[in-house]
Image (cartoon, rainbow, N blue to C red):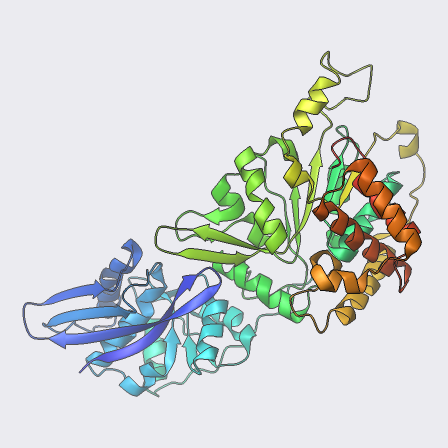
Length: 504
C-alpha cells in the first residue's frame, strides 16, 4: 500500500502541488527517488537516512521507492526532505497515514534531525490554503507562512517535534505571523539643495508610477534624488505587500518572517549580469526587476549597463512581468516597478562645462547617450536635466517641501487613482492606463488637442510617446485635484518629454 503526502514545486511565484508517494516492496534493500528530481532532491535520501538514524529509526530492509508526481514537472530544492521523510514514516506506520495525507510539507533535514529553513514558505502556504490543507514547515519559516491566514501553519524545530505533533503526543500550536518590519526613517527631500524641477518630476513619477530619466554632471544630486523617492511613495497595500513578499520569499530576503509595507528600493550595479537583472540561473530565481516589484528600480550609470541587459528591460516595462525561458519551461515573475535611470551627459561627465569638458565635445555626449536605444528611451515619461549646483547654494538654508509634505500629495493622488480604477483590476495607476481606459480618463478639449497635435508634429512623438504624455498629464492634474486634463497639464507633461536632446 502506498503512503502519500504533499509538497510544492516552484515555477516563478507559483507553487505547483506535488504528491509525494512512498512504496515498500520486496527485493534487494534500496532507496530511490524518481519523478525528475534535481541533485539536491536526489541527495535527500542520504539526509533522510541520517535524520531517521538520529531518531533511532532504522529503515526497513526492503526496496523503498519515492515518486514525486507529476513526474514530468522538474523538482528542485532541499525543501523536499521533510515530505519524503513523512511519507516514508507513514509507510512504515510510525505516523498515521491520514495525518500526513492532509497536509503540505516543506523543509530541509539536517543530519541530526533538525529542520533547516527553506525559501518559498509564503507561496507554499498559499498553495496549501488553495488545497484546503495545513502546512508544516521549519520553525523559522512559520511566521512568514502564517501571513496567508487562510490555513493552519505548524512550525516544528525538529523532525521529532513533527512526529509528536502528527501522532498526537504533543500537538503544536499554529504559528503566528511575524511582526511587520517598521519602515526606516526616509531621507528628506529638503536635504537636496536646488534642483526644484527635478524634485517636481520626482513627485509626478511617484504619483503615477512614471519612469524617470535623470541626466547631469557628477555630483549634481541624481543619486540623492533617487534615494529619497521611497520616502514620498505611499506604503504598500495589503495585496501589494503579499505580492512583493512572495517574490522576496523565493529569494530568501524576508527577515524573521516579517512582511514590510515599505516599497522595495533596488539599485543594482552596472556590472550586473542578465540573469541578475532579469532572473535566471540555477532554479530560475527572480532578478532585480522582480525584486523591485511594486517598488523602485534605480539604475545609476545607465549607459554603462550592457546593451543586452538594457534592451531586455523593454518588455518588462510594458507588460509588468518578465518571462525566464528555460529548456523545459517558461517561468513568469511579476515586475511592476518604477524605473529611475541616471546618467552623466558624456563619459567624462562635463559636457556642458567648457573648462572641464574633453576634446571630443559634443560628439562624446552623442556617442555616450547613444548607447541607449530609441525604443528604450521612448519608454521614459519624464526626462530631466539635473544641472550642477553652485557651491553658494549649498550654504543656503534648506528650501522646498519636505518629504512628508510631498508624500501627502502623492498619497492623495494615488487615492484618486485607486477610486478611478476600482472597476479595472488590471490598472492600478495612471502609467498602466491604455486603450479605452486612457481615452476615458484623459479626454482632451479643443485647446489641449491642438497643443498636443502641434507637439507631435514638431517633435515627432511616437504613438507610445503620445499616450505617455496623456498619462503624465493625467497625473499632473490629479496632483492639482483637477477633474479634467487641461492645456497647462499637457504643456508641463510635454516639457518633461522634450527636455534634452535624446527626447523622441
